[in-house]
Length: 294
Image 1 (cartoon, rainbow, N blue to C red):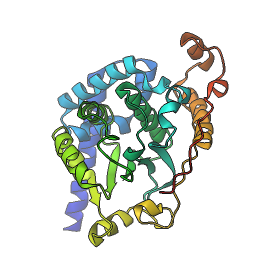
Image 2: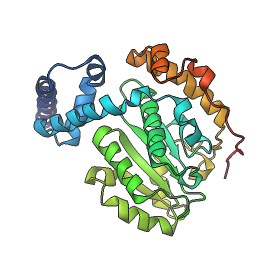
Image 3: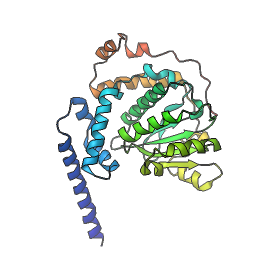
Image 4: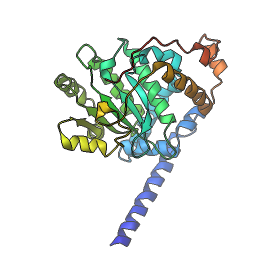
């Protein structure tokens, strides 16, 4: 019995490796950046998202490559989106989950701008940053969403949410391991019902609602995180502090890594964008922000 199961797993692995080779042959020659993007692990994620249907995965991947060639997410730099992050509404945590995955912390109650385009660009920047900071062998990240201060006035429009979902599902497939929505208020339920329509079934399964008085939901979240790392806002013993100035320094350092990763000549890139100064020099002076421990 065990030998049969072992053979089955081996057969499945070989079949999937064959699908990866088939997809690579189907997409044909690629540019340098597209080639760098289309690793075997990347192709597996697109195949997984399309239930290992090569034709559907090919279509999905080609749409992403077209989007990346025009949106150029790898060329976004922190100084372009830093104003969106002044309140810490989205940031990369300084800890990982139990599986060693990168963690993004989102605080919709800290929404500070109204530009849909800038909101999306800021999020895309941090998605790319989170991916770059994944440990070797890791393909997914975890999200912690804190609803402190959330209200109708701080919620993004449904259209913006729909556009974000389209980008996440269409161009970052199988990047999300789990998203914990901690103590969302009643008013969020209507918003979620409206946006859930745009989520595919796999994504819906990854969204976990956690309520402090619901022991099972709290225990589920704690099974993903060490309590010492988990901020008190999420029922742990850690402290959630967002220092915009310090986070900006970290992002500027990561921008250098991003340029190196993608083989981008930063000076040429800055001149092309009308900025001849170094990335460090153009990093904005952060506005004073109170330390958030709410």
